[in-house]
Figure 1 (spheres, rainbow, N blue to C red):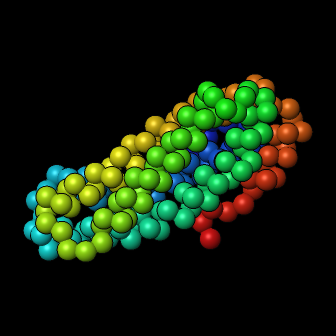
Figure 2: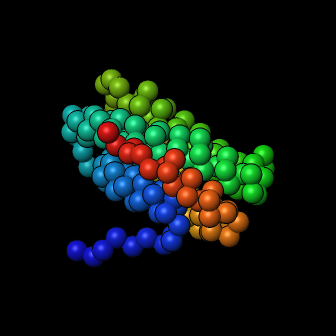
Length: 172
């Protein structure tokens, strides 16, 4: 088993990067079900069981995702925004992606309850697939754009304060 590869040298960004790796691990668990349901080959009864399993995994995923997003939106984005501007540019678009992902997840969870046909199930899991795709690209954008900006523009005292603020668990 290989060691976890992290790119950031700033403690605060390493915390967020570790959270991204954890969330990606959870996402990969439920994304396999999404792909299988989209591919087909299940009976209606089997697909309903897999949809319920997917719903449970996404419900369990939602809490750490929300805690992670709240940490970024409460501490990281406002502080970085003091250096690069907050109302437009990368921070605003990243925050909008948080809202978009939440919307897809909530839409999935709302519609995943009940008895569905195979066609309906394939349609419903599309929301989970979209959330996965957006988050995968989202993590890359944060790490390659915002984390590197932090290293370039944020003062050491602000970096240290941010690390203290971010040093909380997202999965408890």
